[in-house]
Length: 173
Image (tube, rainbow, N blue to C red; front, side, top):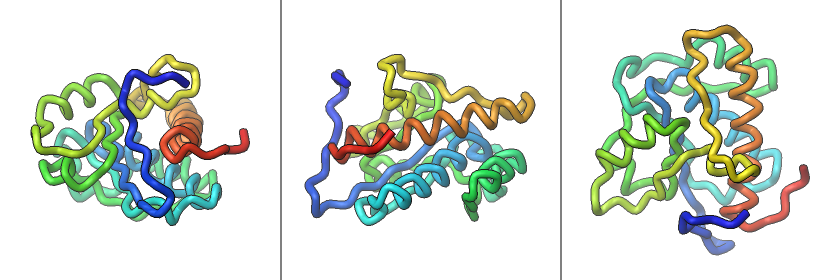
């Protein structure tokens, strides 16, 4: 995939850190965090990541566990999570290599508060959609279970493409 974003490609002996971000940190981003962690473990690249976490741009649910539908979708796919919601902090821009937003609204919010001294590549997670469309991971909170099913399929696909592009490795389809 040709890129207009300058991706950070770590050397083979470097670890990288990834932070997933949505609005309240109870649906999409904790699902992405858990699915990403599971994906890199299954692909054999877990040792390439020093930290995988998630947060929200808003503090509505700080300290809460993920939405029960997120937990159920993860469980249905053999994945567990013990995440507690948190709000993005200024230090995240310095402590993470990538901050991946679920949608353009949260991306705008992240860009607005991003300090000039931050090192993180702040971008849409959907940049790694594999189709050059920059897909949005829609908020499923007010909908039915189908939104959570669609979100899960997206975050697994994006996770594989992220590993493929950032680590510059071959990943089986």
